[in-house]
Amino acid sequence: MSISLTGIIAVQLYWVRNAVDSKRVEFENNVRIALAKTSERIKEREYNEFVDKHKKVFENSESISTAELKNYLFQQIDTVAKKKFTFGATILEENFKIPVDFVNSDTIIIKRFSGKEDFSQTITYSSDNGDFKSYTDENKYSRLLKYPSWQKKQVEYLFSQNQKHMPIHKRISNRELNNTLKDELGKRNIDQEFKFGVYEGGLATKIKSGYFKIDEKNSYFYPLLEDDSGNSNYKLYVTFPNEKKSLLSSMMYALLLSLFFIGIVIAAFSTSLYQLVRQKKISEIKTDFINNMTHEFKTPIATINLALDAIKNPKIINDEEKVKRYVKMIRDENKRMHGQVENVLRISKLEKNQIEITKEAVEATDIIEEAIDHVSLLVSDKQGTINTHFKAISSEVLGNQFHLTNVVVNMLENAIKYSEEAPKIDVYTENTNKYFIFKIKDEGIGMSKNAQKYIFDKFYREHKGNIHNVKGHGLGLAYVKEIIDNHHGTVHVASEKGKGSTFTVKLPLI
Image (cartoon, rainbow, N blue to C red; front, top):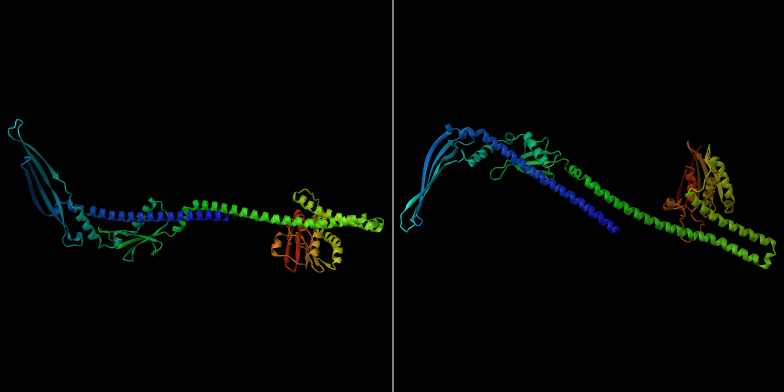
């Protein structure tokens, strides 16, 4: 199950990582396309402005420096097929001399071509009866030559010569570059904040957005204002300060959904594991309870059997004193077993809310003193002591005297049972504004940190299995917790192994 869970989580994380990587690659491709389109649009705009600004030079006849008229004639005769082809052309070549201040050169000549083409074909045929009587079929047509008024390649050359000597900040503005970039990025659904800068030979130019510094790892670049050969001295760099944040936010829904399902799987696994551990612990506690309860019943049952067998003895049955002693022994052991059963039933009824606890105003200090009287013989039998330190001014609480007395008795009996030597018990009382507090402190064997977590659980005992150096079946403190909770109070324990324990109970004052 653990391997399956690990595999599912690994697959989910792998998918998430691939999705993020794919989104990043898509983003990078879109940015590079946007940069390429931006560079192309700026170059096209610059070229069109150049042409629009100077096209009158090529269209004005006054700018013609020289003109030359050229005639061409081409003729071909096929004697076998008796065909003759004739092609003629008249071409006017006009030269435009560009003014010196137009570009950075002394003399630039632009050529314009125009003219007319003529084409004719003559074919000789023989007669149908075999006589070689000939006649001529002549086809003729002509067309005007429509060459461009100026050669594009020559103008492009002029454009490149003119622009390469012009500073970048005179060719393009920050606003134009920013708006063009924003438009091209927007076409590809990239609307996050960006910064840009144009560098020439590794040095910054005036074209940049605010304070811009190249970050090679996180910047995108593309050549700007390339010439006809694809070379450029300028590089346009773009960075996105919130790239990672925007990338994750665009995938946030899918990521959160994936993490949500991973969380569900982990929660389901953890719950199942917790239930397995809990069931195992409950099974161990129940087994321990059964072993302890069996031991608790075996002793009185064995004692009763021995007493009955003794009474049957003819020598003893006539001895009234011995019979009374054995009868008393049987009654005591029977009462002891009855008490064990009552403890189990009481806890069960408390958990099912089948015991109705009536409450009235009682003095908690009196209850504690009564409980001390109940256990005084047990303490004296072990040559121990119970010292009281009553500092509470007010001890009136709303409670049930019978059950609260049992609570204190149970806690005192625990202090006696878990003291290896003569028990030394201190009982403290005190007040806060809203609570009556009493503490029962012993110098017994104490308990571990782990035991303190479960000490108020039903059936729990720190001694496992069939070890009975301390008798009991783990119901006393569970009963204490149920009664105190029913009285809207709290109970907790502080203990250290080998140094004793202190139980503290808080009950609300009336």
